[in-house]
Amino acid sequence: GPRLAAAALATLLARWPLPAAAQSSAPPAPPPAQRADLSPKQHMQARDAAPTRAAAAAEEARLKQALQEAERTHGATAMAVVQAWQDLADFYWQEMRLREAAAALESELAVLRRLEGAGLNTARVLQNLAAVYNSDHQPPQRAIALLQEALAIRERLLGSEHVDLAVVLLNLG
Image (cartoon, rainbow, N blue to C red; front, side, top):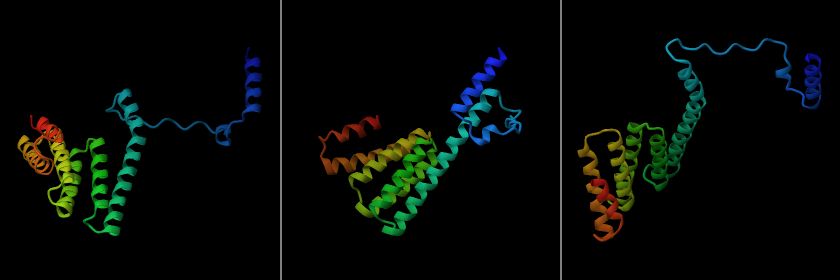
């Protein structure tokens, strides 16, 4: 009965004491108020998303800081800056923040054009930017123009029989 349960609890607490905060006699804090416009399921999703949003904000801040550090250390036109822009673009892509991903890729592309002109890295970024434009429901002409430029670069540098051309051709449809 109740005495047996109390004895079992006392034995457990003797073996594994609770942290001091858990032993407090203060009443537990009430749960946060639910917004009236959210269903219980939506409230739980919003509550569970808060740590994810905080982690994403921290990661974004870290990536922006890495970009600033790369620019400060290496100058505005260095491969370290290209990589920092790529990392930021990848983050935005994963977060489905497509306009910010496009802006980061455009910045990466500008640095690459100054560094290597029309090289294979430039073609890669052109393809990634086309994918972002396509996912963001931009006019298809924008993506097509980028893919055609990437195709021309790859064909010039790799030859018309190279397998990498097939990927670009598939994306062009």
